[in-house]
Image 1 (tube, rainbow, N blue to C red):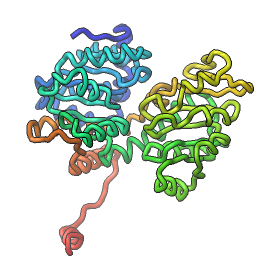
Image 2: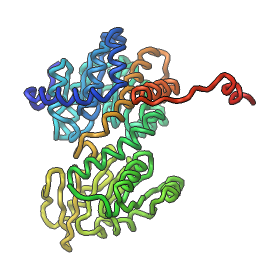
Image 3: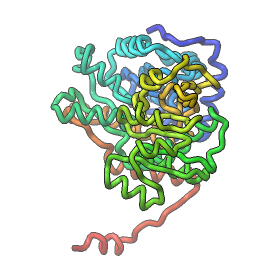
Length: 414
């Protein structure tokens, strides 16, 4: 298969960035050392659709070293880093991804990747799974199954499974305890603010930040905003999460009220139309909006365009400014796409080391249980969570106690 990337000459820079990430990914290094010898995926065709940057590239290389024939595509038009794509191709991995591709090109890349007739897949957001359940159902008999990286993709899988339409086994890696506890909270929490601050060059301290959604990602964004000195408002539709935010020390109110107070808005819901025209009409001059959910539907861009009385313009890289009839200017970061990737480098390396170790083990679990799994949505077994956490603790130089036989008997007693 012939790769489609921006420029193979960018490979040296990509190799440098992958090498940097590798230095801080002890779990993937451990898996690479062990399975590059035994090669459990020898001869297995694998499609990996994920945000294409240095950390994900190293996962692809570890899978390749374990024997897989790996084909990689991006899972978001703005998250692909062209130098990383070039480095992967230079390392013998087939890649279909370019930064800033159109929606048509994005779909074309998925189609090209699926021509490899994968037996295992890693998806991020559900677009690959959606295509397999649509125009490429002919490939399903060849599939052992796949895994899903993010909350949005898991929502789509749950809908498929509930309707009885899920056609092959999928593992919701996102729902593994080690994944959402660390990746969603600490990963999204830090990387979203990395992207916001890098792009705006603005102070967070003293500003009012509105966080829409108080799931694990929203908790992380709110926690980091508070730590940076912001006054944080949370909006929610779930009363339990709402009261949790109150008990965590945040103000909680409907978005229509919060819109009047916010300086920076971060949507983290996985739903559409979280910020719409009525909210934009009451926002402060200079308000900044961005999205940390998977798809660019949480902030209604069409409403922004309808309200703008002059053509939107890029006031600074990755910041589009919209001018309201009364002269107010509202700003949108990264086209409303994932701010931590459209405007930054994604989650911290050490966090993704945990997540990608789980992705690797999910692939091996599917391979080891070929033919024994139903067309259902699974979660990684608890023992794999524990194994990964123990390895990560060891790599960080931390240790924990071990229960004595007497303690185990006490806890097990009725």
